[in-house]
Image (tube, rainbow, N blue to C red; front, side, top):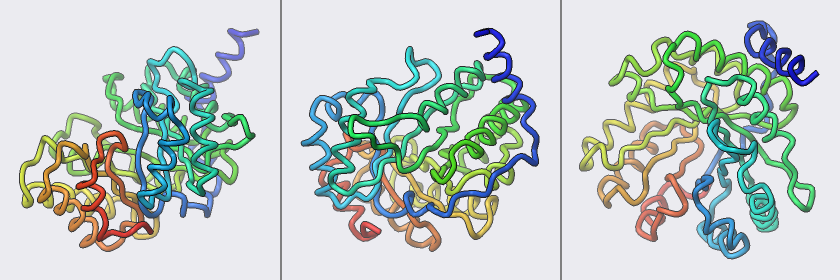
Length: 289
């Protein structure tokens, strides 16, 4: 029976029809405004969930993005008990919490199970995530065509099963795809746009682009290319970083590029653990949303 269930799951991933798309949720506001990020390696957040939540709230953050697992994790939700307490502490302070899972596309049944685990997750107080997302960056599966097929199949199932829970696509920046065309040829911007409520491009420039001009150019072009690819209506949340690898002028360049693009509705720096006082201050002109 277990083998049969896995077979059905694999079949659903591979054969889910292109037309089987639910209407995206209207609750995309969860991805708007000031955000911050906590991944599965940020153990201090889980050891001290109350104080960490208080510090995040004090920064004016509206939404916290938390990682539940990646495809190489040993469990479907990493540190589930600690994560549940952390989410409750965030909710107690009025913050929204969006989960993300990083699929590898190598084992479709694992990706499906861990995607469903985000939807099924409940905190000790019975709370759930306010939104979910797939972190679409794994290139371990060398065939870009098969990667795309599995990504879209997984995304259709997530869309169909998420109900009113809003969904975001976390992706490489479009300028990254332009600079590295072998990463993911034919990335399915149009198809994914019909399955998600928001896009979150990882416009990370810290360490790779030095100075104001280079940083501004990279972020601005990434946002402009993405907006052209996904159309004018869907929200975009710009994620910059890594925070402690950006100096003052590079932080200003990120903020200016987000401001000048004109249609970005959310913004953040990756991640909370590496965002110092100067980085928070740099984000201030964008507001909290």
